[in-house]
Length: 521
Image 1 (cartoon, one colour):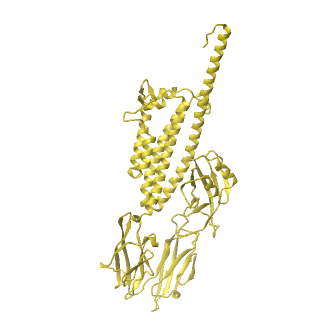
Image 2 (cartoon, one colour):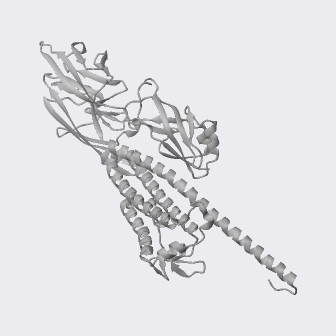
Image 3 (cartoon, rainbow, N blue to C red):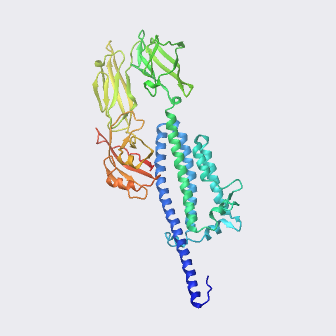
């Protein structure tokens, strides 16, 4: 093209060549800059996912502290995966730092057009260096160890891990655009501009964070789904009083942990002291309860055992019954029972029942710091300072004998509330429109008291946007404006939720757990 019949034509042709070369150079710089911008967005996203994973881990650890048998093994699995992930993530981070050590301006992506660093570090001719082998081995090791920890129970997650961290076929080969098999590491990293390789490494870090997130989510939601299965129910013995006199009829009910009309057993197989109980004469079934009407029997301990049989998914599920009660001839001690177990909570009115079998309520008194009588045997305890409180019950038997019985109760603070959006907690999928009109709330999961918690403010965070502080329990105009900029598939968060108990605003609740929302449109 630079040829021509005259010097002028040759000059014109040469200028054309220079102009085309400049266009190609400019386009190359634009591509490099584009890779750099993608890398920045991936790094920012990794930080946000890290925050969400910490929140997930916190929720799982809270569940484990409340139900160690159910959630304890899951927390151990999660911690192992986190350790593996952190180690592998940090290895990639150190590799990125070493690759850009000689780059003065880390934002000047247009100078990162050479691939010398990784070419020298990973390859020696057509073979891998020691570092190149380590890079591939770490990918394979992470994939294998994570899938081993998860096991078959979390099949969907292990399949995703296998796809994310695959390194070619059994020989470490992949097909190039010409259909020829080449080494996986060479195909992805040999001869590429530095900024392109950095972006790939950051994307691999994003895969690590996504693996953590999916594993934690599967563990938490999987166990919560299992909790509502009939196989996890147990039975409780409800009694009108703790002891019965000889000749009385025993009045009580065997109920499931979750008590409602939908839990009616399909078949009842019960025995009392080895004698089979019959429906109608010894018990009736009403509102999901097996209500016992059997005689209390002779003085002493009596055992009720057997099974409540439920039909579930075409199979019969047996819920074992193993309970005892005592029949006594003469009361000799007070019976003090906390309606909400042997724990009272600071910040709420705890109902307490104090009674002595055989003694009228007007002949029984009870005393303790913060204890007030309502009527009859009903009391309310509002704990003060300290970690324990002792309630002392005093009564007078018909023969004039005095009875005084102490009972200790642990004092606990109200547990940490969980933030909600539209009544849902944890990680939620929602459209922008629904999120914009939804109410932010807070609940006390698995807490025995129904408290009215009012949200007074929170912070709203959209990836790539400044955090917005909101007063009230709905998104304000500024928050909705930030929400409009959220991309589909991005995760927004409700953070630093401020909440109060409506009828006890002086009580300071623990920090409310955040809510993560995946945008669907």
